[in-house]
Length: 199
Ligand code: FES
Image (cartoon, rainbow, N blue to C red):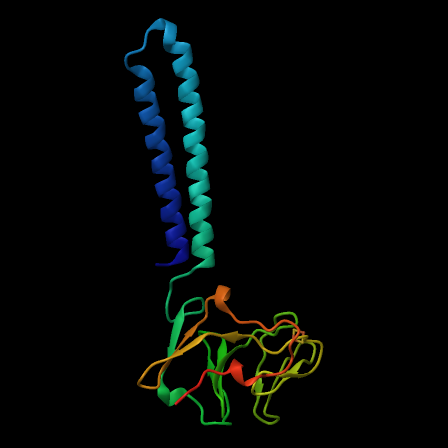
């Protein structure tokens, strides 16, 4: 479901829950009371209403945080994206660019990687330059090899990677969830364990 629609639905549910709590509290306050207990009942009602409203607000914030951090959409950035075997490059071939997932699939002797195209310096989109065979950031000149190693510019680490799972038919599923992107702080070089073995 669209996150905006889910957020609106969550707010509506929260409003309905708040109204229900208020009505229940009023019913409770109106039954079986004597004059001597009315003041105490009003205090109890006010306290319960405040606690209920606070709980609803906290639940709404929690739901919105969850939607933002763990989007469940598929086929778009933030979810799982499947790449068919026909799109997996040959060893040493040009990267396959996935527009929706914002990644490149690259392949070498060790296997495959899904490289996040967001520059690890300040976040520009890094295009692949077929002439040089490198990824070259247009913003401040960081340069990365096809394996993702940084070989120039101000970036302080290699390109980030997205987790890959390989199916029996040779297709791969790439998780583009921002919380699972694999970073290598302080490491500029590719190492073989960065790659996922590919048949
Ligand atoms: S954003 Fe890529 S080098 Fe600065």
